[in-house]
Image (cartoon, rainbow, N blue to C red):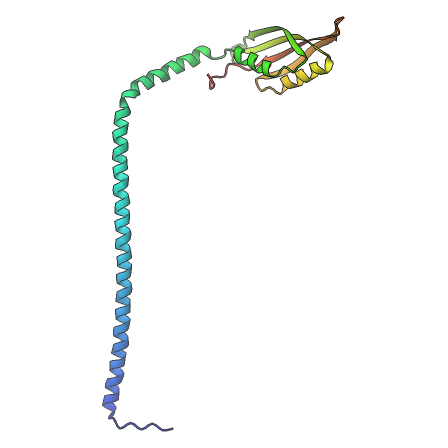
Length: 191
C-alpha cells in the first residue's frame, strides 16, 4: 500500500515539531511533579523532625525542673555515701558470723546435731585481709549422715577447705565428728 499525502511537506514538519513539543512538555510536567513530590515529602519530614525536637526540648526542661527539685537531697546523699564509706573501712575484713550460722543451719541434714561451734579470725599479715576459720563438732545417727553434711558444707560458697578431722562411733551408737573450714570475709555488698 502506498500512502499519498496531499498536504505540503511544511505542514508535516509543523505537525512533527508540535508532537515533539508535546512530548517535551509532558516530560517537563512529569519531572516538575516528581520534584514537587520530593520537596513536599522533605517538608513533611522536616515538620515531623521539628515537632520531635520541640517535644524532646520540653521533656528536657521538665527533667531539669525535677532535677532542681531533687537538689535538696544532694547533701544528705553525700553524707550517707560518706558514712557508708566509713562503715566499709570499719567492717573491712570482719567475718559475717551471723550469716555463716544461718547458712550452716539451713544445710544441716536431719539426723545431724551440732554440739559445738567455734569461730576464729586469723590475721593474714600485711598482704591480705584476715581469714576466718570455724570448727564444728556434733553427733549424727551414722557416718553416712556425717558424709552428707560434709558434702553440703563443701557446696557452700562462703566456706572453703572443708575437712572432717574425725568421725567415730561412740558407745551411744551416735557418730561424733569434728569438721573445720575456712570462712570468707565480711560481704560488704550485702550489708
